[in-house]
Image (cartoon, rainbow, N blue to C red; front, side, top):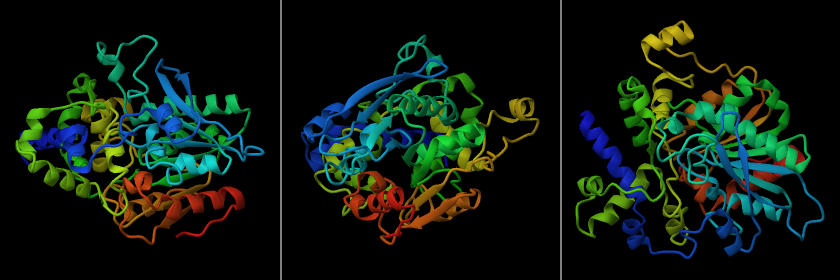
Length: 403
């Protein structure tokens, strides 16, 4: 594939996903579309708190809490929900009451916490660097999120709740982060009661997601640019109008085609992400990351679930070998339940099962609904039918039935 074409296509897709006006014109608008986490919770009849935690390397992260409801006699425990790549804590509220992950767990008397990774919409702060003027702010990838952001959030939540363990529900990159953390800092295994991986991303060998294909093509060349990767990409409300015209044309009639095409590439199922939820989704995605982290996932498809690829010369200096080593997952002892779907264009079932083969204490649930796509795990109408029941069952009984 021509490199210029690949970059143009990439930015065109980004523009369509970012351009609320073009997509909303097709699917309508929603009063929940532009609300932040606290505003969403209030609109939906819940109370939310905003907290901040500072990482060891100076990033100031926003994290949210849905405290125990007044109707509950006592807390059943702490659940942390961690969002996926390019996304935010909003994901666990977007489908609304009775459907969204965090609302369902709150209704069942759990104390809910939803952090955000460095650089996204809620975490563009640092003790030293300005994200708008200091490129050093954007010098990070999932590796730093896993080794700095996640332990800071876990330790903060456990201290605030006076608990020794929490249960972890995560989507996509959020699963990868805990895998890396517990592999590199095994003491965190004891702090996690159980992890529930929704569409987990580690090995991406069989991924059909076009963005990952492009990332894998671009990664080897862009990795060598090093400091040029320290920029923000996929910022919430960002626009690249010329690229949008390249892919979609200039007429209103072109946008519906582009919208359907892009969501189809993501495994979009119109029967799962309903007409009332889709306008809310496009108001909240993407939520920003660094170009270095964007390219990092192309490295992972090329190299497997491995450490950062610096390129041949620096790999020899850093790792004493030409290619980065795979993450050693043998120190991971905490239990995992991984959820997968045949229609997931990102986390292929074959790759999820391969990940499971590397873990000591794990079960895999492949959903019987073969239409579930990558985004349906967080935005789909059947979350309360396929995902929250087995999660709640496991939390209360230690066992579950895969639907």
